[in-house]
View (cartoon, rainbow, N blue to C red):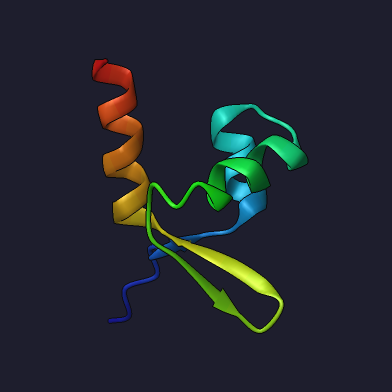
Length: 60
């Protein structure tokens, strides 16, 4: 059986999760506070890295 859970987020996913605009999402990704990989013209954000960062932000 194949594991279909996403391992990465797109910038659009980050926008939806945080409720922020496109420019704000790209600015956040540019800060490199979580793992980001460029695949072709698309940025992919490590789900585990982003989720860890988000949990840390919630606890502060």
